Length: 141
Image 1 (cartoon, rainbow, N blue to C red):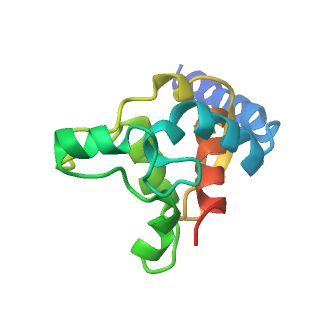
Image 2 (image 1 turned 135 degrees about the horizontal axis):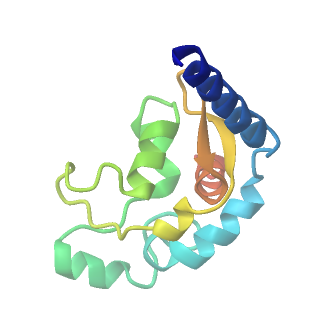
């Protein structure tokens, strides 16, 4: 019975890897469309924290939206993929002081793509979330 369970587990894992591998990583342009729909109103069209709601956010919280083009520079020149994914999807919500971002549950839906988050291990990440992360990585200055 134990051997059967292991075979099912291995088969299930193999199926997940095949399904994930069939998806290619999204291009930055796919993430750009998601950015315009979900992020630009606060972070601005160019990601510099100056969206149309920035003044209102600053008045309410005392902080402006983050300049998303400076993420890598703020992290010693490296773009922290896992940290960015966690921040967007709300995984770190409640642990960081002053985190005012809304939750983006719809970005968590959809097929997954294999993504190296910086540790050399591929993890299945919902394609829309990966697309947004790829776009943010592309606008670093």
